[in-house]
Image (cartoon, rainbow, N blue to C red; front, side, top):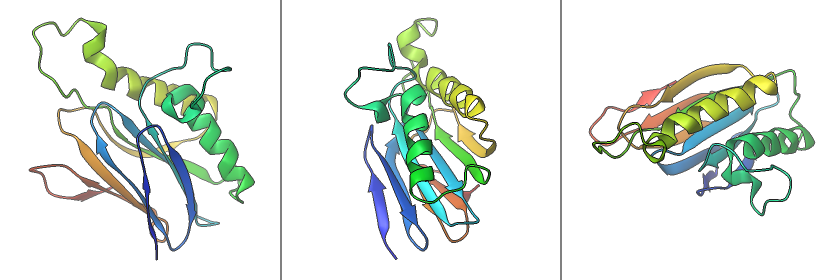
Length: 161
C-alpha cells in the first residue's frame, strides 16, 4: 500500500489500497473527493480561494474554484463515477492573531473554506464531513479502503471523519 503525499497547490489521485495525504494545512484547505464504490480518491491542497479569471493561470490546483473542478474532471477520467463522488474538507484555520481581524488578509482561511464549499455545491458534490476553521494547523490522511479521513493537529488527539 502506498502513501501518496500532495504538496501545496497540488492534486493527486489514487486507487485502493493507497492512502493520500497532505501536511501543513493552515489557512489552506485540503479537499478530498472520493468514489467509495470504485475506490478512487483525489486530494487537492488549496492555497487561495479563487483565481482572478479562471482561464489563463499556470497552476489551477492553487485555487478553490479551479483546483476542485480540475480534480473532479481528472477523477472521472481515472474511472470515478460522478454519481458516487463525495467530499471531505479540512483546513481553513485562522493561524495568526492580529489586532485587525477585519482586514481581509487575516481571513484567508475563512475565504478558502467558503470558496471550497461554493465550488463543491456548483459541481453538485455533497460534503460528507468537515473539520474546518479554528486556530490549529492540520495534517490529513485519507484511506481509500475505509473512506475515513484522519486528522492530526498538534496538541490534539487524532480524529477520524
